[in-house]
Image 1: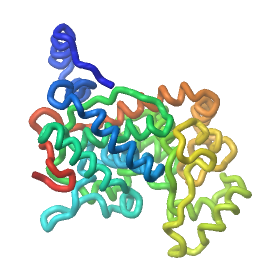
Image 2: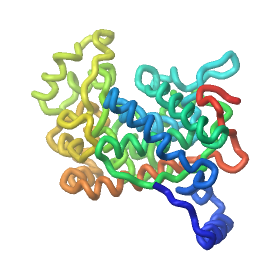
Image 3: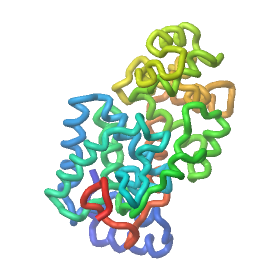
Length: 323
């Protein structure tokens, strides 16, 4: 957990901020040290309760942060409900029937407002909830950078664009291109896709992979065909774990599954399919420490995608609507 700066550290931080002057420098691990000292335990308590009730919720909260940052930056735009004047992102194809956990974010926001009203942004709550979810499910801990503010609008079009959330049908080249357009490397791509060590996928998103692809273990494909009928529209919402062995534990088993071609999603198996990222998958499958380290670095970089800071945006009192 972040601790307060000393006076000398504050001076150094201010000098760095002045000299660097970019969004990364404006985010800090102790942004709420004085304005909301109870922030971290408050968020953690709600996330722990939600995951205790449903282990899958950890993956859902992590995904919300990812889906936020990949559409116009980390600004909580994906939390906004539709209004007569605003078409939000929740019904865009990558989010519809996929993004979930909004009610948990509401609970976190309500709890945080009780201890420090009008101080903490919804965008920062998403980042903290994602970090806590990983750690609660036995993954690594890290100090998340904070200081984001909330968007005043959302973009349904951007959420639906080909360069938004990568679809499950993505090729390796399109995945790399998508991540590079957001300042993330191929290493970040593979490490962040390791988030699929937790959570589940819908039949609609893996049907083509288990019936048509060749880069999948045949017995694994047949086993999943039993709960995902071949014809579209039948069983679309049936679920399968993204990590067939430990779907509620954050570990490196996901990468071991890729080595044996037992990934439920085409896009995931593309990470280990004779391409440029094969070595990274092999490394992470053999070395959980390397995976954890690169995952943390990737999460911090992703959290720095075009955040609103300073006087930009606002601090929403309700994450679902603009003040």
